[in-house]
Image 1 (spheres, one colour):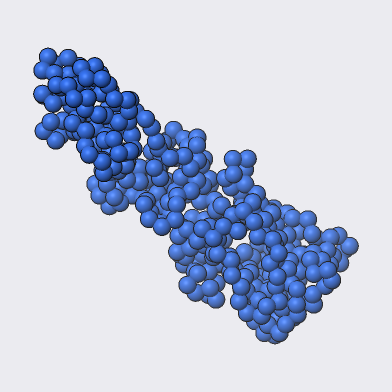
Image 2 (spheres, helix red, strand yellow; image 1 turned 90 degrees about the horizontal axis):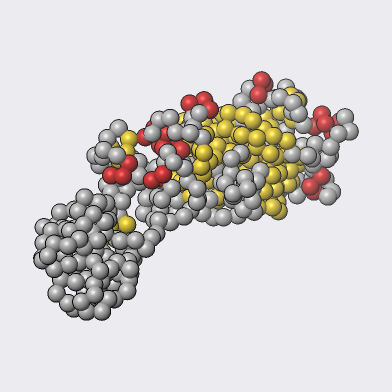
Length: 392
């Protein structure tokens, strides 16, 4: 089941990605009629000999372990996921349906296989508790989908910082849900930390356009990405790094984002508060956009002079650069941590980060000693990212 973790929103998600299964009543256990009057077998999947059924009884009214007996209303209290004789729920969870096999006499699961869990109402339908909703989230008496950490927080204010299962495109459709770390407190909370699985097309779409002066040589599922300038050309190369699951972003937060922007002999010079244009074809750009309009910046990593802090320096009055490190004989190749919040001028339906390389910059030999962009931000021990890039 896709939202096992969400049904434990307050208690925690101890097993990311686990599905809800079970062998108890109503969850795939088999109930068979044993051929004797008023006797069904126990919900263990084993057929009882005639006259030895453990589940239902005859008209004596003895307890039947929770299953509806043929001669009367439900006799017990166990949760079998079935219905009483009159079709009403037995007072237990009513979110199980038959899997297509022939129904057992008591309305519990049949012999064809496990039940299919149907967890309640869709988004927009009225609810009283989280259990009433397919997403496991009841917010303001209406079911909502857990499409991001922000929707989780809006539905349940006061949630703690930790991992949660989210499904950005909604339950039961499109991409599978995944576990993400949610910061629910910083600057109002609701931050979704993106999995940096760059080589997985279900998470990232990385494409290039413009002059082909950049080579991507590292792209893995452990938070590592590298591109470097490999040719000199007349204008710019664009690298678009789009997060595929549709998590809307109005702000981007770099949280101990571990990266470098250069080799030991040259670094990328990012224009402050804008993107370069001729004649400044040796400058670079680093901005965020709506994937449907990638040429229109919605925010910049370095929006003002004040955002250009060490180990960066302002150069040429318009760029944020680390070239000064090479001038001092210090190699700027070691990654460092970037912590920066970038508000966007408009909401983007998906996160899209754009790297703009000025191709006339002179490529050095070997190439990786020159201008490069190298991300080295891995996950925590459980495989979930708690640092890197967060959006809200």
